Image 1: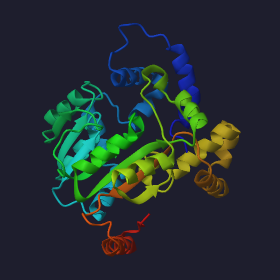
Image 2: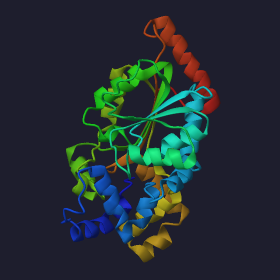
Image 3: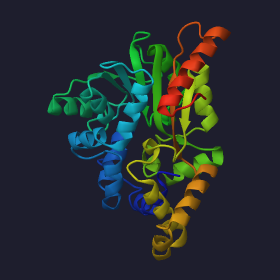
Image 4: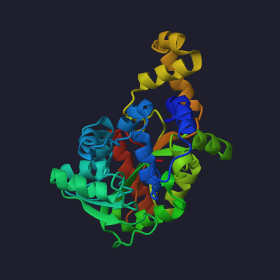
Length: 332
């Protein structure tokens, strides 16, 4: 399942029509440039909403905080030990929607963002905090070099962040360092490709990469290896249709219907795509076939000291097996 698949045709028309932007339209900040360009495309209005890039950041933050995606992520965090009122580091916080969502649930949140933009960066977060009265600590910086005290946080949250980094191993090491012993990292909605050919295809069909050059994707083993080599124990890897986190705000049935329309044409696809047989076929194929840029999510833990001893490692695994029996997640 490629999140950008349904926008491919529209995007190619829009980008060819607007491929030459005037200097006044360009912004030295690529994230701001991409967001501003998207907002100007009438045919991509729904994509702007789905990506929470509304003109009014408070509207976007409210919608995200009440959505199924965040509700599910919060369940994961609590299940794996995030204490009430715990410290959350939101790396790559963007316009602050996820920082806001954690903060209104009573967590102490630091939003780490490398972009100081008014649309997609720290100035947007400050505006959101001021307009809503929600306390969000803001730090301008990079996830590869966080510069904060070791063991400072109970949860590191990365929403659609890891695939943007040029040094996947370093950002995972930094996340590990700033987490307390037993703390959790949750990395959601990361773009996955199977190799250079898929990467090229993904970048070509992305709505704004032609303009900003900021997109990237890694293979599933690369994400997992970076987490493990940093010291994490991976508790769960979620595939594209394993969790609402990876396909929200679209439903599974909506994704299947759109796939049928793209492959069979609008009229025939609309008839076939709503049938139970097609939806079952599409789900089975989605689990087997890896489309370029598909979304995956990861939950991993920073093991307590001494966990590498055989006795402690067995005890630690038994603890997560007990959690699995209650919560439905498994040790991986």
